[in-house]
Length: 156
Image (tube, rainbow, N blue to C red):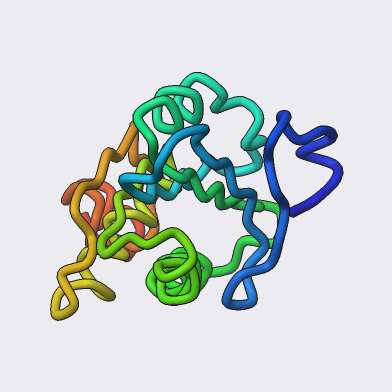
């Protein structure tokens, strides 16, 4: 997580690396009842999502913030982030005593949430809910509309 985009963590936030991925963890004040990933829009600081973080922690969810850096984004980045989410969960589930997880994703984060469900949770069924807030970008093309698909592959 770049210092450039997240100058100061909110009070109580814990930065750490889990399953090889940098994350920011926000814990509820009471007993934990769930774990929710917050996957940001491209280059959007996690600190810009305080209302979502506060709503989730007040509902006794641990929030695991995942920052999407579009500056180093490559063609495989969506898939790599999506693939990391279940691995992160495997490392955190016993610590927080949870059996399933949820994802809130904004923009490209919404796309990553959908890719996670489609490609990496079909058999395990550990993902309970996805809230995809404005999941808009053109990769992977299978999650875009037909006009964009045609434009991207050079069709008419």
